[in-house]
Image (tube, rainbow, N blue to C red; front, side):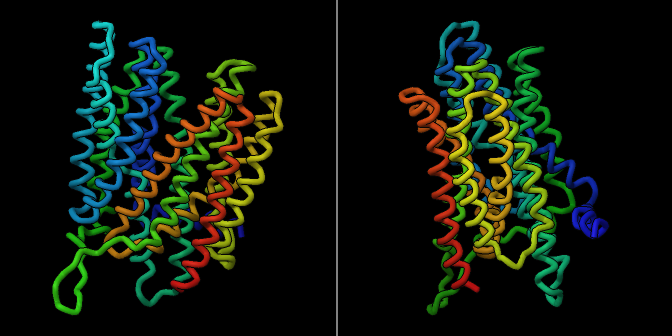
Length: 418
């Protein structure tokens, strides 16, 4: 049994090659550093938290809008040229942001060019994580072959998506931590400079990795109507379910971060909030990794509903702690259903995506998280400011409950499509 369990993840390098996993892991790290690095740099050079927050918000808005565009282009033109172009444009945008921000420091003002550069940095950020998921979906399907039983391919895809969610969680824990270390020990501009250097070196290597050939360009997807005229293939409405679910997931994340900042401010300072949040990220990563070993008999929809309902129930416990150790314990437990929900929603997104539009759907799911995080941060921050952290902690409870309801809707849709 233990050997079989180890074999599930040992199968991934056989499918994609040994270099693909570390390359995909570190190539997505700049995205995890970008928002926090922008916040740190702009706040440092202007002395204004509002300016730093506005610049970080511009990064988030740019990423939420730009990711689906990059995904659609990757579907039509192929991943390699889109990733190469976005790596170049993003490097230029990030370096421009660093230059403009430091010029702002000397001038003593806050020009709109900072927001423009921050938006451009977010919009052009290479979507390594979502496009890696697209490659895994193609690789597992191709390895199974048309005559192989579908259960084997589904199990391998579950394993790959479990790894991808774990990689996302780890990078979004390590990225902000790396920003804090470099900015405090060396200079506020260094994290963004390092992110640019990693983007221009690692993303092209990911772009030209042989696995890109598993996802050929499809051109503009079309279908033929009775008249014989070609019509563009539209995304089915059911794609909205997993996208909305990721918006709820992002709202859960953003509101939890805002509430933790208010909670920790009264005990040990707002900087502790990042460490508390990392506790949830670590347990979420471990749980996401474990999904590869879960039985598949229950189905994706039931797994979605049960884990989201558990999230909502455990999120209520956020109202209980009165000390940092108690809050860390609650967050450790709360993270356990989070990773499996993310794995499941990405898997459902892959199921409902039409042929040739996987890149669009996967990047739309990632954008949902970004947009939801901005929404959650805004709502949670306002409630924390007006009514304290207890009110802000109600937002992740509601977001998780909405996630469970969307899972119930997905169950109905998937049953009809079966």
